[in-house]
Image 1 (cartoon, helix red, strand yellow):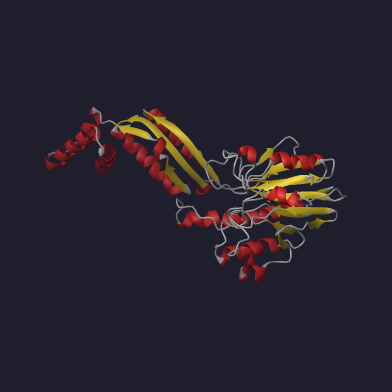
Image 2: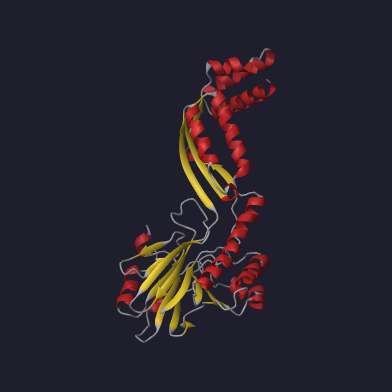
Amino acid sequence: MVKFLHTADWQLGMARHYLDQDSQARFSGARLDVIEKMAKLATDEQCEFVVVCGDVFESNQVQRQVVVRAFEKMAAFPQLDFFLLPGNHDPLDASSIYSSPTFIERCPENVNVLTGPEPVQAAQGVELISAPWPNKHPTTDLMEAACGGLELDDSLRIVVGHGAIDSFSPDPNDPKLIALERLEEHISAGLIHYVALGDRHSTTNVGVTGRVYYSGAPEPTDYDEIDPGNVLIVSLDADHLDVDVRRLCTWRFLRGSWELSSNEDIDALEEWLSGLEDKDRTIVKLSMVGQVSVAQKARLDDLLEHHIDLLAAFETWERHSDLVVIPDNADLDHFGLSGFANDALAELQMMAEQGEQAPLARDALALLYRLVGSRQ
């Protein structure tokens, strides 16, 4: 029986355009901090090693600081071996981060790069069969190439790979897709005993054998990920497998749709936003549809402005949003303007009714409402 930790898609050095400088620093720090969490978990669970199944780094051009800080985290656990697989973000091409002077000079003794094709002994009687990416556009199934020449012996074999399974892909003719049926044939024949995959950021058990897993990314990276933020503690022998999912992430990506047509709807949105925990590590994208008055739009703008200051990032899902601002009599009474200011108000009202400038005019009315309110 061997016990190890399966992880992937650290993507150290990742940047997100919607994060400000402060949020980006926290986001980057969390991706490094989770290495220490994984190492502590693996140590507590008496794992013999850690496999990182591709995309350890966001690219082959990450800053030197990212590399040495990651090494510092791993070197703090010298009893635990880390096996890193190059993926599509950090392939073994001419510019590979793994052959850079910083990597070579600073790499701790307990950090190993899986360059293939020779099996690597990870523990007594345990072999890693690796399928590293040689470049960003391989023209073959790297996993099948790694497994093709295997023969039966007494070793426990763990295949470490990265990429999309053919049954998940909309393009069946993509030559680099991983053939799931072939992997499971190798499992059934006893040639391999577990397939550790990266690339899919959500924890996923694929196939029918129960021995092919995507670990998912230990920290989320986008809104579309179904179950990110996990690592897998795997206990394995030839006849038995236990996979224990452990959640480690501290960041969240939340996306929601809100229909707004009354003060009660805005109340519900406010309650939802106020109830979010760890706002400084939460990224929110909202779609908002409906019809509101100028006063309600002004209140909504105040509400969102407040939470934008609290959240790590806030985005409006523009292509799914259609919020119309319709001035009512109460709005018009509120302004109390005269002269040129009243003429400008009337012009904004006309512009807000239709045309390309209508959304801007409605926003202007809401802003004017807020400004008038602040002076009363």
